[in-house]
Length: 401
Image (cartoon, rainbow, N blue to C red; front, side, top):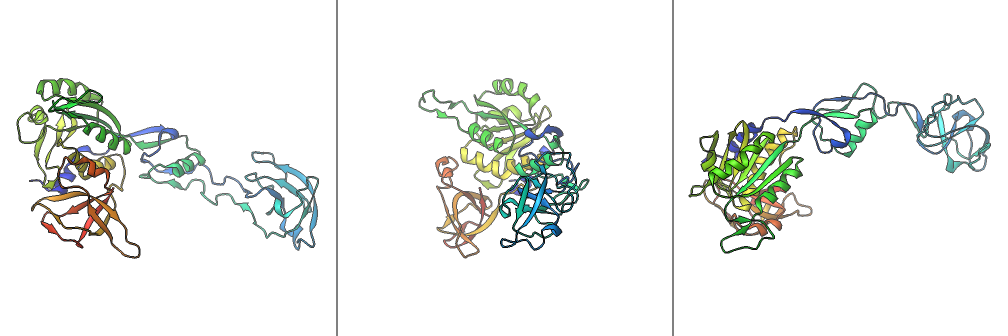
């Protein structure tokens, strides 16, 4: 069997890195910056007021206080956005708003709360030092310096900074387009009533949600019957628009394994990975398009996504932090695991106040069909290949979901 780590590397190598594309800021949320961004302007681009108040020369109000206010004539009014600001003459004040440019000659701002708010003259009852409530040019970012480095994940703050330094669009790693296909003659879709021997299809719903959560574009083909000709006829025409095909079901060792039958000899290899659940896997290229084939049981699908697809897709789209957070925790009950396989069990992790390790307990059994237990889990408990039993209180690795 293939090791988990080896197969993870194989899937990652299959995808490579997504192309770079230029997108407007509004379409860049969650994407990864592909090129450095250097500031086209300084931030702030000019000295400006940090408060609503009065621009003054600090020397003109030295010694001012509640008992000995200083009165100055108000020579000008400076709202935010004004571009024709006159110099401040000695012995005068300019009323100024937050963000408005500081007039030449001024070196401090008295906030309005420390004045009488006058418009022709103002009584100042505080003595600010030079530089008080003044935002200096380039205090945040200096023009020409690096504002955002390639590899940055673009969230609200990053996009705000890009806009502030004059960017209207950015070079990013393009989101991958993923074609998802679920297979099985037994699958039907709600609200069609179930007949004996049928089940409602859920794998494509889970995979699509997980993929969209990473920022991928997803097209779904649900419930392809176990017929090789029909599988090829339905899926092959859609490959041209896909960066990746992900299938679920039809890859095991029994009869009617439609994915294995359709893609064997077409550039896709099948084998078993040393893990539980999720052993049967396949990977390769079909008509030049990368293909990853997953088992059919729902827990196997989600565990396989976490173990292989999630890190590979994130890496392909430019992310460097592709792994789930890993912590150590003490088991609240004993667990068993098959020798030679890495077990991923659904679990619930609780941090322990004041201690390095928390506690974790399994949710549901090891069965790959027990989907309801996954909804109660916030982690995967990982037991290594050489561990067959882990007693209560044993420290184990936990992947936080």
